[in-house]
Amino acid sequence: GGLFAVAGGDVKHFAQIAGCNQDVAGHAFFTAATIAPFFGWESGADYAALLWEAGSLVHGLYLHATGLGEGATGMGCFFDDLLLTVMRSEGQDHTLQHQQVISQEFGAWQVLYYAAVGRPTVDQRVMTLPPYHHKQSGG
Image (cartoon, rainbow, N blue to C red; front, top):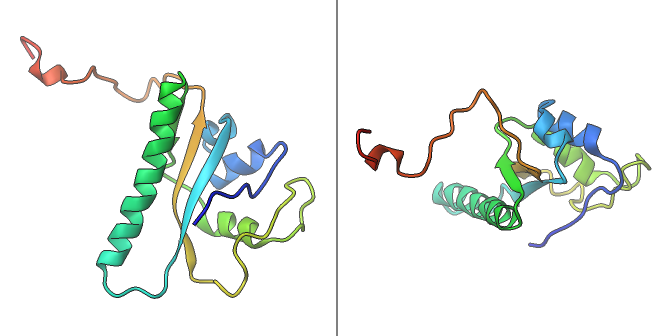
C-alpha cells in the first residue's frame, strides 16, 4: 500500500466531476480515493475487510481534519471508472500531471471510497443534532 499523489495543480473541476458534480469535491483542499485489488480473495469476507480498511483510512482523514479545525466527508456518489482511468494514465493530460499508479495489467482494481477534505460548510438540507441529543431531558 501507500499514499500516492496522482494529480497536482488545479484539479478542482476534475475532482468535482469525479464526485458526481458535487460542489463539496470541487471546493475541497483535496480529494482522496481508496483503491484495492479485486482478485486473490479467499472468501466474501475479504471484500468486507477491504471496505472496513478503506472506511478506517477515510475516518482517519476525517479525525485529523477535524482536529485541525477543518472537515472531511465521504462522497456518496463518485465515478470509479473515471478515477481509475486517471490513475492508469501516464501523462496524457499535462494539466493533471499524472503519474502511473496502477498499471494496465491490474484491471481488477476498484475504487472503494472517495472523500473530500476541506473547509466545512453548513448544508441546510442536512439535519445536525448535538451528540446524545436523545438522552437530554425532555428528548
